[in-house]
Amino acid sequence: MKKRSRFIEVKCKDCENQQVIFNKVSNDVECRICGRTLAKPTGGLAELKSKVVDEVD
Image (cartoon, rainbow, N blue to C red; front, side, top):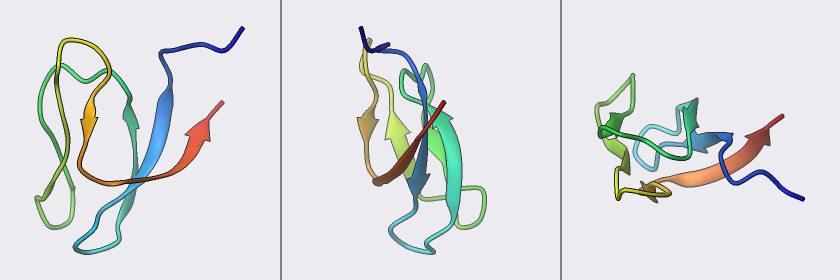
């Protein structure tokens, strides 16, 4: 059975910075470099505003 909660690595669409975030965020997650919003909370899985690069085990 696959876990639903996990950490994912995402890539910013503006500056291409990659960072690891949780897939169920409780606050807006912004890129550490340029400040673009990468993910928004929805009460469940995050609404991703960036490209998923990898799943972190």
